[in-house]
Length: 149
Image 1 (tube, rainbow, N blue to C red):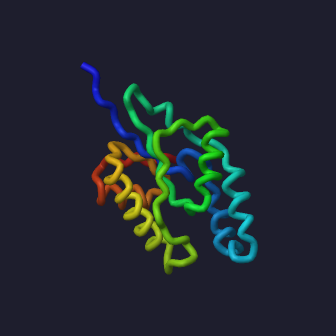
Image 2: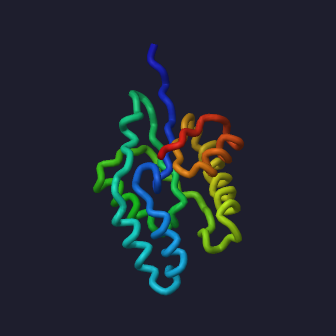
């Protein structure tokens, strides 16, 4: 008997592509001075994990990202250039880190936004890199969250 397949969810930055937290922190500081630096940050990412290694017959791949929606074209272009196959790309609204008081608060807001996307898109297993977000997602959506290092 053939199963209907699973919906696998993947965070983009830090899971599918590499992430540089130092550069992101620097971006938060200089973004208002030169917005083009954010563009260059996103185009320079390298593939860290290809979701297809986890995908079985009938499975769906949903990529969830907190990148600004204005970079959807750039994100789709990067995914295509790196042959990352997916069924859906979901941008979740999340304030930039420089707009909140603490990193912990930002992680909570990001986890809540991702939890809504996980529920809305019926994701069975979700892959995330930030341990604080993994823990919070497990509280919000169950133990279907895998940490990627």
